[in-house]
Every structure is written in structure tokens, then in C-alpha cells.
Length: 367
Image 1 (tube, rainbow, N blue to C red):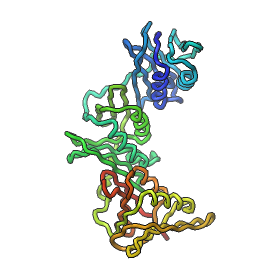
Image 2: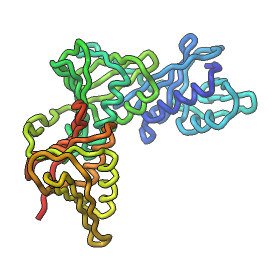
Image 3: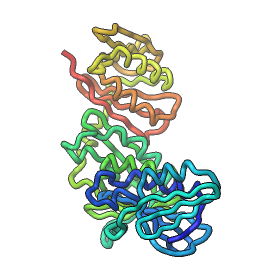
């Protein structure tokens, strides 16, 4: 193999592929990245057998076609460090030579014979989606997924197409739940469970691209194709909790307040919230106030009052400070709406003007 390409584009492709390599695999080739020339393109592919990524970059010249598996970190460090606009890559057996106008380096490659190809899904469901819509929606909810593999179904992100023309993406760890939706024309109802770690990988990839994704999936695997890349992952088997049953339909108290001010005070309360991260809300309808109280036996105590437009009953409830604060980040609105459904019931946080995002937090039990 012998080709010359843009050093910047080559470096970008290697960095995107890096996250899907398996650096501890017993199969040496899976610890590296496959490079393969096809006409005037270079294919860059990585996989850990559970996920896979493939992209291509244009080359300025192909002198000899072929393929090679390069080591991940040394290759990225090398291409990022050398100067010049272009790099020439030559492979002779297991030796890979990288040459620029000012330097020449040779790395030892891995065996390429066992490096797998991207899988194909022959039978399954299909849908097309905007990469930008998927990115924005998934990024808004993935943080709420469980980090424990004890229950794989909630260590996953639910992606579903609904009969009302919406695509909804949701995640929960059983203590809080985030869901965001967006409209999509001609969608056929579907449902799949994306492992949360894989969703994080997919989000990092989508941040570099725009346009439409053609998605295919069956009960075990998911494949997304874009003009510039392909992405594969195994799906979680199981059933996501029927969370719509716990979403409140009626509310005893609602408070509308400035998002930035509320976020500032919840973060301040975190200094005094202790190991349990308990933060107590007191709502005063007649005064139009929301009070936040936190106490830490080792640090001290704190309280703050925020002006709010309050309807309904006064109440006093405790919530996890971190959970409440994290749920505010996807809200870009000036105002937020806190909707309480009574003692022992969850708090629903929304944008008063846009219900496409909802965040549900379970209250903490107090002695």
C-alpha cells in the first residue's frame, strides 16, 4: 500500500476511529485501526466486535493499493505531531512508513488477516433520520442512563418511533428520567435499546457530521450509514420500563422561575448538600417564593430564596441536588417550570414554551 493524503483529514479519521478499538483484546489486530485503499479513497475502520466504525478520506495519490492495521496511539501521536500539509503512507508487510517533507517514521503494524468487515443487516427495520436531530435529542438524555450493568435495560437509551409522528429518546436510572422528542415525517413505529456507553460513542461521532442517517436494525444489532461514515453496535436485549405510567398527569403545585437563577442556587446548594446530596424545596404560593435549604454537618448550612410565579398549594419536599442540576443543562429557555404532584410523587421539570423535553426526578425519603 502506498498513498498520499491530507495530514489533517487523516488525523481526524484516526481520532474518530480510536474510541472503538479494543486495546486489551487478545486479538492483536483489534487493538489497531485498519487502513485500506479503494480507488481514490482510504478506508479507516475500527472495531471491538461489539461496535464498529468506518469512514473514508480522499487521497491525493494512490501508488499501490492494499491494506494494513496500524497501532492506535503511536499513529495518532505521530500524525498530530509532524508538520506539513500532507503525509505519505507506505506499507510493506507489517512495517508502515509515514513520510512528510521533513520527517520519516516507521511503525510496526498488526496482522490484518483476522480484521473483521462491517456487518450487514439483511432483514430488519429501517428508518432515516437527521444526524443533527438525533445528536441534539440523544445528547439531552444520555446522562440519565444507569451506569450499572446489573439491569442492562436501564443501562441503555430507548429510541422509539411513535405513531403520532414523533421520535422519542429516553433514559433512566430509576431515580430520574429524561426524555426528548422531535417530529419526523412518515415514521413507522419502532423501538430499540442502545447501550449507554455506545450512545456516548455515537454522539461523539455525530458531532463531526451533518446530513441524514440511514438506519437499520434487528433484535440484536444496529447499523447507521452516512455518506461519510458507517457505525455499528450491538443492541441491548430486554424491555425498557414503561415509564409513561409514572409520569404525573395532574399537579398540586407549579412554579415558574428564571432558569439561570435557579441553576445558580442549586449549584450553590451543592456545596452544603452532604454525601446524600439532599436539597430541600419549600414553596410559598402567597409570597411567590421557592426556598432551597441544604445542610452538611461538616461544612455548614445554606438557604436561598428565589422569586417564582407559583400556582397551587404550598409544599415541602427533598430531592437529590445533583439529579436536579443535571436535568437543567438541556433546557436552553430563559424560564423553567417545576411541576410538583404531591408528597412522595416525582417532580417534572420542563420548558414552559416547549414540552419536547421533560425531566422527571423522584423525591428523597426523609426521616
